[in-house]
Image 1 (cartoon, rainbow, N blue to C red):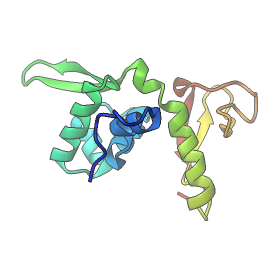
Image 2 (cartoon, helix red, strand yellow):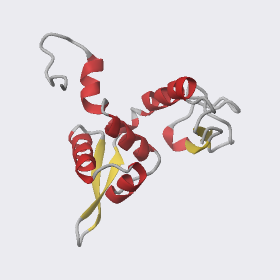
Image 3 (cartoon, helix red, strand yellow):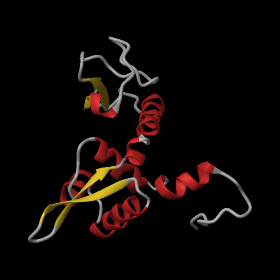
Image 4 (cartoon, rainbow, N blue to C red):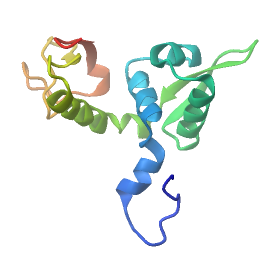
Length: 149
């Protein structure tokens, strides 16, 4: 049973946020968008998700302003999906969830490591580079296979 989308009896930003991003496929779509995936078929290939599920998640993320559709072809009309500022603001939460999963569910080590493009250092739990100390933003990093890959 899904949580209601109204919160007359509670004032909870976590519950409201989970209504937008609390679904497994939604989080994986957002992860893929951070990894540079933009087109429907590429999301489907990367995730192995059913077309109807992907269509629903992309539409919802666009409706909520997390992604925006950008045309890249006129005939036939085709779109890319790009993170909005609101979507990019999910990056710290995604990286915190990644670090938590690495600590608790990666017995062979992290399957993916986040590297600083500027110096090659590794991102820490505090979203900083372990080598140069820079506070890292999504456009300054790249995921690379880790020891648990």
